[in-house]
Image 1 (cartoon, rainbow, N blue to C red):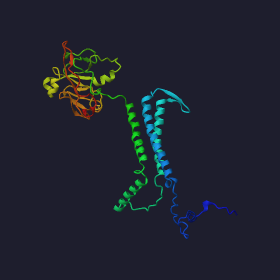
Image 2 (cartoon, rainbow, N blue to C red):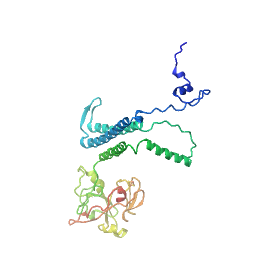
Image 3 (cartoon, rainbow, N blue to C red):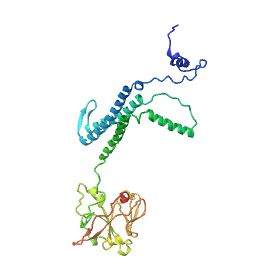
Image 4 (tube, helix red, strand yellow):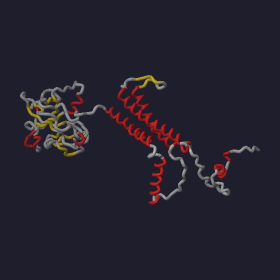
Length: 350
Ligand code: FES
């Protein structure tokens, strides 16, 4: 039989004894306790601690540089330029550089934090007894005390180089996300507030493509119109018609309840945006007896004899009205643009 010692067969009490911790000789299953604390080189040598501090600061600074490189890549590289990178193959240089720089920025923050914790923060092992769930006042006080002690031991206040570079790295990293917002496209500027309608633009019947005349609009009929100069063959036709499409109806002037609507009409002919103010469906159902128009999408209903106010459904605003008149040739024309943004509520019309 071999007398060779197998460590796995060592009893806990023997392990504890080997580590110099206390265990009951008559109880081999006693808690062996924590091993004796061994100070790290950084704990006893201030030069080693300074070296670690510089490594941590270097990682945070590297993260800052990577974030700046991320932003520079976003601005400098076109999305369609590709390069060959082994072993990936051909890849967009923009995507590659964004991935590498953002990855490096995040990795350096993580690596810096880990190195800081492993080399400079206190690593003294402590054991705490299990407590009841509810926190007694003295427990809360102890937590605050421990927190303050932990903050002091981490050197957060003392090691200003680490603290400041970490703040710098953490402050710069979110810029990557802000820069990516540019991919949402150019700002809309005034495009959501203006349409092709302007003073003097004739109303063109969308079916006949001829200028609309007052005598073309019979009481009880619903006619759709678009601005003069817009053609279905235009590249941006869909974009423009989505804002400029009009519903034209004729109402007996004495049935128009809203004074402004009457003032903006021509002999009872009123022009309202065809775009529902809920989520922008085109409205097309007109009930001539009540002068109600119904949006087929979610049944918002507007009263065209009362300023196109909402009388039912989820739409939050009345349909914008276009002020119209008649030009020297006897055709209906706009007297300006809409005074409110058309379509989906434009989010409270700020
Ligand atoms: S889009 Fe018209 S009711 Fe929803």
